[in-house]
Amino acid sequence: MWSLPLPFPKNLRLPRGFPLYGPAKLKVASTTSSLIMVLLLLKSPRHSSSLTSHNREIPVDRAKRQRQNANSQEKFKREAQFRRIEYLNSNRDRLEYPQLRELEGLQSKGDPFDANLFGDDHVAFKQAHNSILARLATISASAAGTPPSEASVFYLDGFDAATTQTLLTAGFSPKNLFVANDWSATVQALSVFNINCHHGRAQDVLCEESTVKIPFCAAYLDGCGGAPEPVIEMVQALFGRMIHHSPPPCLAIGFTLTSAEPTGRELLDRIQDVSKAIFQEAKQMGYQMKHVGDDPESYGLSPNISRKHEGTSTSWIYCERDHSCKSIIPG
Image (tube, rainbow, N blue to C red; front, top):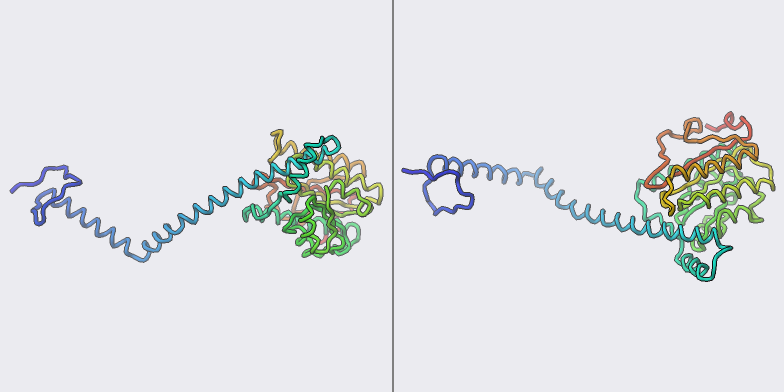
């Protein structure tokens, strides 16, 4: 008798009934046992369903990633469109004919903001800050002895009307909600809620005859761009109009900036530019200012709400003319 030499060839095919002895026989037996165990395990319901689930998830994950990538590319494209419109609008008085035609062409494409391009996490982030607006507006209204149903709020909103719906749910009346939007289709969509929706830039709408004398208890300058200059113009218009009415005892201001900014300046530096403008304007009107994020719980807000998500940062500043506001914050 003889035995096959080791190592045992992997691709060796033996005739049927060929005798195996010694180490070769043990190796074949061991391999056969292992194969049987693997087949039994795969046949079991647990491993079968897991394998099927895994195979089913692969194309789903791939499709999800592709959709996310497409949405990201579309967001970048729309952000660039918004920045260009913002720049051209800010320099409208100095534009030449080709630039005016460019502005008209960009605006004809419609509102660059599309809530459907954002994931669930970002939608939740925006909704959390809409809730902050409603909370701070309620506090400011109470400081003036006014219920939410009689208090006026100024803000920016998109086609989805997410901010509008949050304020209506919180008890604010549509007749006292004022919105600015630069796209007629969005204005038309928001008008369904019977709010005061104005077609134009926020800094211009704030100074219109129909709005300039209305004291707002809160303003949410929730834009889609990263440049601080347009937001600073809104801030200046918000406080400059107070010469036409008595400044409210308290005023909550929120503003949004994104990381999309052509000069490449740090987002934090641009946030500080806007905050500094608010402090300067508010101080001239006799206000003291506080960053809500430094002590959110004193305003009845959760300390876990994030200020930044996916390159978008929202800040809140609470302005009060005396110390009475804190003592009458509703529960």
